Length: 216
Image (cartoon, rainbow, N blue to C red; front, side):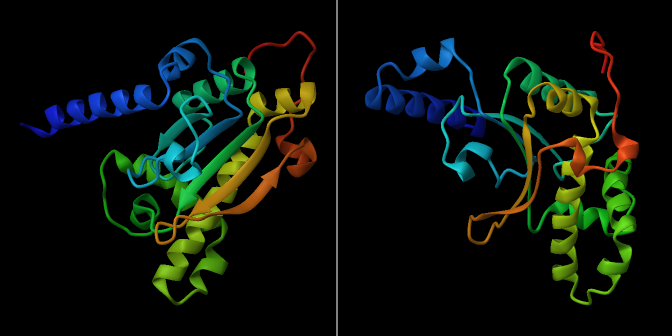
């Protein structure tokens, strides 16, 4: 039996276990999706959103990429964000990174990673913005973990800079934006930043919208 076949068997065992506990489990999942949260997390296999938050399928809408970045040219992320905010009407967006992130570690080197260089440059830009603080940290692990935190904070601000979030704030003062960091060593998420209005960002990033404007 190969690993994929093993995975399929595990799926069948999981589905049977769910039905044994709750015969209506999949019927409910099939007919409704009304999550309160959008999770923008790292692709790292050790940080699955539902597992670390102890939530059920249907409670968190999820987007994941290397180092949990919010990039204003990433149509994948923007599409997820727009759907979550305008269709699902989620109340909270969480950018969740984790200590020991491989993407952060890679961005702190001068190694050539081919196509990945373009993605990691976004993290290098965060490093540049906070270089004085980071260079002053002598311990490399502590410096790396601080960049993990600073990267999360900057990605939350990047969310607030999008027209998707700003339009929603103008209409109904939601969603609330959160940045949290997860520890692989103890499984705990710690809050780093919360933004909930246009006053949270400098004026230069704010948009003026016409009432009938629909383009993003």
